[in-house]
Amino acid sequence: MAAESKVERPIEPVAVDRGDGRIELLCKHGVGHPIRALSEHYYPGKWNDKWMGVHGCDGCCYQAEFQLMELHAAQEALDGTLHFI
Image (cartoon, rainbow, N blue to C red; front, side, top):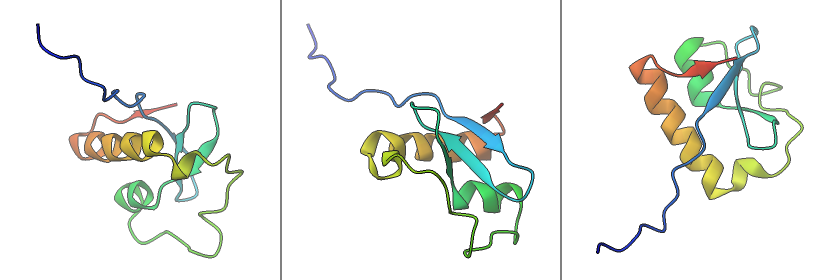
C-alpha cells in the first residue's frame, strides 16, 4: 500500500470582484484578502498601492495554506475557471 500524502489540497479559491480594481480571495474565515496579481490580471494598470491592499486581515495572508490557495487561484484565473461570488 502506498504511503498517504501529508500535503492537503488547499481550499477551493473563491474570489470577490469589488468592482474598483480589486480582486479579493476569501480565506477559510470569510475575510477578503486583496490579491495584487489577480487584480492586475482582471484590471490591468488599476492597482493603487496607497489603498488597494488595505483589508481587515486576520493573518491568513501569511499562512502557507492561503498562499497555496493563491497560487491555485492564479492558475484558475489563467484557465478562465476562477469562481467568483
